[in-house]
Length: 92
Image 1 (cartoon, rainbow, N blue to C red):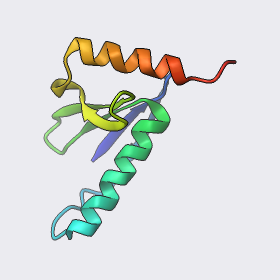
Image 2 (cartoon, helix red, strand yellow):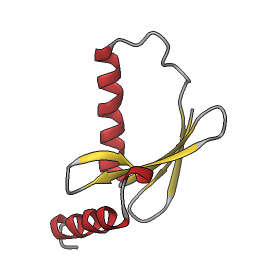
Image 3 (cartoon, rainbow, N blue to C red):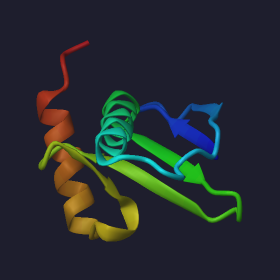
Image 4 (cartoon, helix red, strand yellow):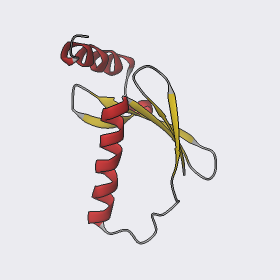
């Protein structure tokens, strides 16, 4: 699996991971979701592609405090999430 992680500035940071996934227990799957949540929360979004080349974008939803697929979010939900992100961002 190839991941393209976009940080809040839009700078890509590529990472490669093994395909893994066969025979995972529910506890292992939960650990993977926690990893996805950690990456999305740190960088704001993550682009992943599978062996077939299909790409999906995961966004951190600042309103619901969880990672979500961009295709499952409406434009209004994305805007609300961005507003929430800006309201909790520390002053620089």
